Each structure stands twice: as C-alpha cells, then as structure tokens.
Amino acid sequence: GDSVTQKQGQVTLSEDDFLFINCTYSTTTYPTLFWYVQYPGQGPQLLLKVTTANNKGISRGFEATYDKGTTSFHLQKASVQESDSAVYFCALVYDTNAYKVIFGKGTHLHVLP
Amino acid sequence: DAGVTQTPRHEVAEKGQTIILKCEPVSGHNDLFWYRQTKIQGLELLSYFRSKSLMEDGGAFKDRFKAEMLNSSFSTLKIQPTEPKDSAVYLCASSLKGAHEQYFGPGTRLTVL
Image (cartoon, rainbow over all chains, first blue to last red; front, side):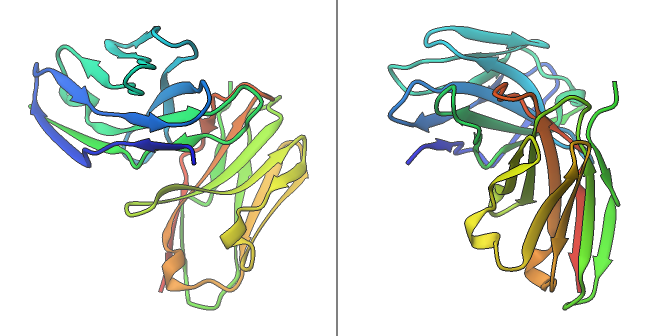
C-alpha cells in the first residue's frame, strides 16, 4: 500500500550545520508530497508542498525535491538555527481525489545553540 | 483569521470514564479530521468528515471512539469507555474541500490512569 518512510527518528545538530532528513515513499500513483513541521505544544503545520515530479519546494530556507526516479523527497536546509528544533513529517496524498494524507513517523530535530 | 481550536488542552481521566474532546475548524473549511498521535504509532486517522458527513470512521477505532459534527463549525470526539492505552495527543485538522493542505489545532493531551 501507499507509505512514507522516515528512517531517522532523531537528528541532533549544532547551529549553522547542514540539515538533511531522509524521506522515501511508496505508491503506484503520482502523489502530491508534503513536509509538515510540529513545534512543541502545537499541531503540525505545512512547511512545503510539491505536486509535480522533479519540482522543488522551498519555504523558510528549507527545500525538498520530488524525485520520482528514486521515490524520495528529502528535506534540506543549508544552515539550521536553534528555532528550527521541531518534529518534521514527510507526507503524501496519493491522488488529487484522495482526502487521506499518509504521514511518516516523523524526525525529531534538536539544534544545539 | 482564527485557526483550528481544540478544548480542553489537557484531560486526565480514570479508566472507564467517558470523555468528550471538542474542535472548531477554520471557518469555511469543508473537511474535518481527527487524529491520534503517539510516539510509537505517529499520526493515526480516527475520523474524516466532508461537509458534516462522516466519510471514514477509522476502522480499528470504531468500537470506543465516536466523532460527530454537530454543525459545520463544531465537532466532538467521544471516547467511551477510556482505557490507559488511549493516552495520547488527539489532534483535529481541517481543510478546504480537495485542497489537501490540512490545518491542525494544538491538540488535546489525554492521560488515562
């Protein structure tokens, strides 16, 4: 079935480090892909979204490229700040008529000052 | 604009009690979702409403979990009877019909003793 895999449960970095969070997906369709971010005490909020293969989503210094060939949507940021500490969820909707969002298990990013 | 509102923010219940969680979606949104969030399982869909009609009632959660939309701007999630394994954060989200981007509330943290 449709699924999203985030292998990293936790990532610890120092400020100004490069961030890379791995996300791969499995579906027989052409999904829309998302990254959501959840700060402590809040619900998840949309960080970025890409609907078309080979396109890149960019938001608040974060970017992710929809790679249909490797079925990946890794999240990157050149230089993290302490305020980026949060849980990041990769997610997909498997087609435009579907309502269900398939979420990954999340990656907890801890940025040290 | 007001986001998704959830009350209460915290709830403590004894095993066997009935609890009711409340959600007010973003004004004008047609779709409403209830999720359960735990560290082990991540985000699990409990219920989905479109224009107040129940479209999915979460399969395995059917027996003790009941979500209702009393009107387009108010939804409840009843858990009856509660069990310790129900301890989790319960999130409500809404979206425009077919938009896929979901707007989450801050969640209700439920502890069942």
